[in-house]
Image (cartoon, rainbow, N blue to C red; front, side, top):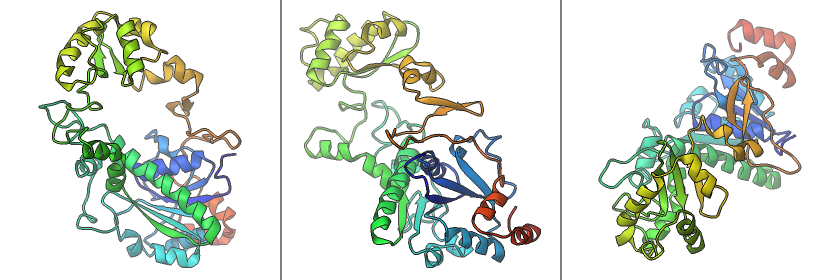
Length: 377
């Protein structure tokens, strides 16, 4: 059983980072109960990986009986995940004050893009907007070209889902000592800003030009930290930053030592990158893997996410699992004594309504009445 076995999380149905956070908590052993809307998209049809390990109940929060049902669930929960815009839960009658009056030890985690307060709090947004406001998007891309979104990994997932899990775990730890819950304001713009911590430090000591793209060591300007096309059309990545790793790159790529000696001179980077481009284009990706993979060059083939599960290193570590016919990342991190696991794939909308309510102490006639008045389904 995972390290969060015995904890109960109520996840109000949403998309993106909030379900991701719930997925990680479920992998870690928490009982995550997704509060769905009747008629919502079936996660089994959508192949929604984030629904794995969760139970699904349908509660109509627009009825008084549905709200009271939810609040009774809150009495037995440790965490509520709120994915709505600020104020929506309050309008529904399930805001943090109401919920924590029922359960003072409750952690009420609120996931938004812009935060609970501020001039943009009520505005719609997506990952691309949050990373725009923190400098992360401006810094990503080639010189002279437009910024390039890194999928929705920085704002939504790293700055959102991961930050949510981090906050929930810290709040649960504190509540175990104080006996008191609290409200978490988890904003994706805050998380994206945190992910840029290193660049702020580099810029402060003159080691980063924040006005340019592809002008710095980690943004693709340096010849020893970039991707290169191979003879087969595939790509490889090189990250030979440290001197000893760079020396090995020179050796294994059979580069001229004198030409490549001045590694950290930015004025030479364009010329050296052009030479490396020719070198890597002379062999296929597989040939370069045979030469460099597993060495201290800091090398890896650039794989698509369809290729990644078949790589020997990922197979050896069971980085991916197949659940209900869907290949997906395995739980992480790995615990030596209380391992995380994917207990099951996605459950259908409302599949667990009756069993969850029964486990929470609802009598059979109560459940039937709630079903009859369309408060649960």
